[in-house]
Length: 250
Length: 222
Image (cartoon, rainbow over all chains, first blue to last red; front, side, top):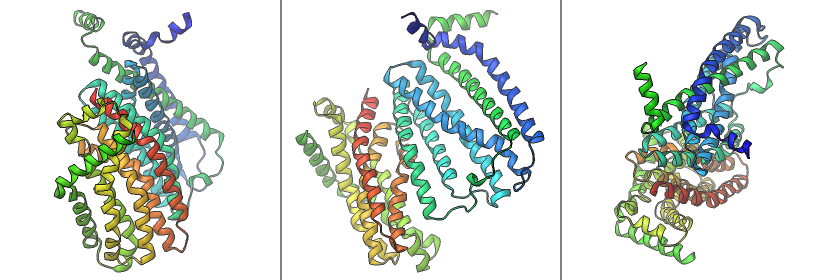
């Protein structure tokens, strides 16, 4: 019993506000330090690729960004669903805070993919199954953001967004396999990323460091954004008034 | 349950018949949009034949999205939608009946007129048949998915554009396998595999979309 109470302690917006404020600076620091180390190893230590030259080095940003874009969609849909099913306000706020970060990582994955594709494939864009489904993922993020921004009533916006995110999450595998099959029908890119030779250890290390850096960044920015949403929505609560007064006097 | 379905379905059809021109507008949009493509890409029959299934399918998608915006709007504005949901009939049944009526009014005429447009694009008879069957299996999905979008955006200022953004990504599988069936038959393969997948997608959509749309209506009317 005592444990179950502790588990939900930080579901209260006021306590989450305090905890996230405490953690955010450390997460920012971790994001900066990890990406500096990761980028140094990736750009200066890792060996040059035999076939792709130095152009491949964008992989250290591209692949972690693509991973984050997919994971964050599922996390967003999960929290939005929790917020809808259990009427947990904080979960809905977190879901809304995740969406812009997820969309940004999707965009980065597409953008760096284009930069990588030009020197290696000779084209900024090919209608490859992965690229196409990443593009569709961006549309799903934009749809979610547009829907929740278009609805003025907060509760309706949260719940409608949750429904849309869950419908999207169910459809993502269907869309992915459709696009994959469509691509084989149309004979897309002849060079596939899966045929790349196995990776050197330093490359893997740099990629992992960048992944952790992106995770830290995602946590930090989602925390900061959630704090802003909490202040906005709880502006009539006593603890917010106290907090703001203290800020004004200090 | 059956009685509620029939009542809502018949009511929506009667309402559509009283505003015939309005009900025909999606078809007119379809006709105009399809006719623009040869003017845009040039009149070479070989190229038109190749892109015809894609054009017909994409225009059918857009026509469905245009018309689905009004699926609940009028009933929401005069309060009858709330009364329907309070009537004791399941929201799922009402949503299914309305989506079914929407398909009868806009989807079915699209399916029936598609062969005509195939002829404009110089498609052969076999490909025309396959295109029609793929539309017959695919357009109900558009009405069902569209009803989810319409329920989510009920009463919003920018509902029309929002529906397009919300629903089009979800309808990509229907588009892929619908046009894929025609492509298969044109390269000498059997289209039955595509039919099977379209059918499976349709069954999945029939089972899930009305429930999602009913939940969305409840959220929007809270």
